[in-house]
Length: 145
Image 1 (cartoon, rainbow, N blue to C red):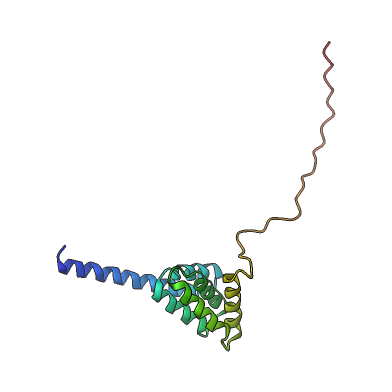
Image 2: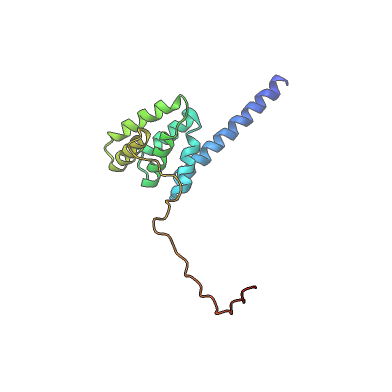
């Protein structure tokens, strides 16, 4: 591959990555918590770029869903970024904004194993019982002899 084609290929990859980051940032600020949490999780895989966006969302003047999704993304960081994510959450636990403090404190508690992770739907405690069907009176077969 020639040097010119390689530069063109690298710039296309760079533009695609920037577009993906813009899209995830927009989804992080969504009012739907499911979309925001998914964006936070995907940003947790994006190394320094994802950390910067999550940090901005956590410390900025944004809605509660955005802050919770950012805290979720920070506690979901992987590899070498996990320690940096925990440090940001510790900073947020001492922040002046109440929503930021609460989101960071809960995320830190989950990371430290003090709160159980909620996974899936809760099982029902009370079982739903079906109504027994009445059998129609049928003549019994005669016993065999």
